Image (tube, rainbow, N blue to C red):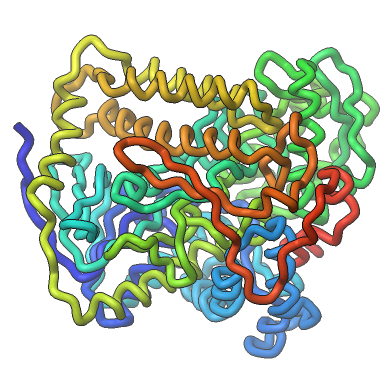
Length: 605
């Protein structure tokens, strides 16, 4: 029998170690709360925050008038930013959440930059109101902000396995200390999730620590999930082996000087409209179009055995290739050692291309647009539970183009502020014994199971199903089969068996718990993708190729009842920009002809 080793009592419990969690802790502390942070890794140096590879910023109007930033462009106003986010999200955004993003981002973005600059970290400005920064620098800035606050206690290397409840209220969480094997019962007046997104695929992008823990735990605790069918991909390295999962290929295409021919497995040129290729260096909307056009090629069976394609360089000379990569290296100069990006040698990547004249790439998940259904105060609808950043949803509608780094720090701050203020006058309620017993019982069952599916088998099955189901371009047949396959895997995973039978740094146990959460998220995602019979944002259906503003200008929501997923629709919250005209539009034509592409994310340097 497993026992609770200790109880930790606080006002606000923050789960996560990245941007959303850090700013939530700071805001809660500033509003008088005693705060406990619990992170599966090291706060500020784990999760996906450290993998930030680009920029974050504010509107140009605020940068110019409020913060007097030289070179800021005031024509990119708060109103333009608001309209861009809603339009680029294909009009499914909760516009109250968008307003919160626009209104609160300047102050928080600027303060986090100050935290970093106090340590000598580099922030390079470019218009209209953005700074380039590395993930490491950003993480150090966040840690500096936390150190400035009182009453924040950090528990690193503690994995939260489930939320605890008393009646309908979330009262804290059960944590497992990975290095001493102790179970910790965290009790709090308010609990904030800042745990990031979910990515269930075989090909992992640089954002590999996206296991859907927060979404799944909240779902089991009574929160709703929404927009889970929307998953953003980006071009990711498949070869050479040591670069697999790197987003370096995509970052290369962001440079105007970089060029290549896209070819399929047989070497045949892939027909991509010239405008799409031109957009790669000026707008993140190119990611959506890449998914749309390359998805067709892969569905036609023209992809490699790894479900990828090639960047081909046969028509370029060595000198031309050198110039392309000189432009890439110049962009990262000063942020990383010369010729490197996040420890990866750009020079070696270039030399591999010069030797082989082509290089295999695929699509890795970058961002899960869907998550916990929240309002503009980051409230989940479950008393005592808040969510911020990629673990939640609503700001970006059907497509994330605006900055996810800004989303997490802005929403994290709001969650901490509201949670501290609302819980200030409350009495601490302890979790019911039955809730604690259920959470502990989940661990005991996994530890005692025998003869069931192994973690390795479950992981490979989950990834294989996800690759075939939640891919770039979907259809009724593959989605229906995927839902069935997920459900079958769930039954098998009820008896998942592991070799080690203790809690002390049991990686198998940790992975089994993460797979459980990933399976929950993936199943709901597939059911929503099957239900949404249209193409919109980053949800693309080859059997329903039109944007259907007659029947599907709605958000999909799922609630777990009696272990079943109950799906329904809700209208997007509208404050300023009205719903689109009730008509059906060709997806490719719409994306190519509408004024889309978040301008403040375009690198003007």
